[in-house]
Image (cartoon, rainbow, N blue to C red):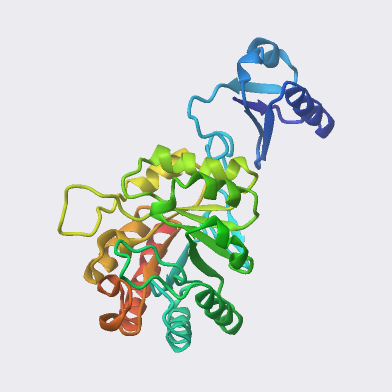
Length: 334
């Protein structure tokens, strides 16, 4: 349920109303926009007398919310959420490029790539320390040593870092990581989501291989229900009957999610297609669709990459894509 307060409502009146809701065992989410204040009431609202509520002098309107995701719902929070990640903002018109290798392989590799993508316009560095692989015989990442290398690069370049967590037991290792990525395979790892909800970390939540947008938003709700609202949603392709691409990139998810939620939405064209030559057109299409950012895999030697070399751009290719992205952005915001 949401209750919109009338203009001129005092802080004391608002707080008294919130306490009344809380006395009934309900949670209250306060969203103060430029022109109106919205109270999102979460819990068993069947006990709330809507007629009584609407009769209050400070109430503009009352509406029940049918969607099961409450905190993530744009009706609760009409303004776009903007995440400030060490001075790098994303969401609400702030667009960012995230770039880097699929996995951290060595000190020289990650430092070289970080400096190159930063020079081309990337604001956030991605790199996998823990790698979920389909085969148990494939490279699984450098684990804690990979985290250490990412933090070293962060100190050298000043770039915020995003890297994937696979196990809740490793959470302590991510203390200095700026954005914790929850991969497609863990999108419905609810125990992990609950623990991330107890933190104040920025979370990059990827859509699962065969999950609906509603399921993605419900996973975000798990995190937000714990008190952490610092979430970026990522469309990274879904599994369909098509075999020419690794996945099928669902770009319609971008405008649809923007209608449903206030959370920032980015696109990963690398994992979506699995083919480096398709990354550029899909990245540009994502920008045109209104994404708040793109995440692109870049490797200085894709042919010898230990993970996902086929979908990785070279630094030179990435530079060209970044320039085209900037031009598309100029058209969209003009």
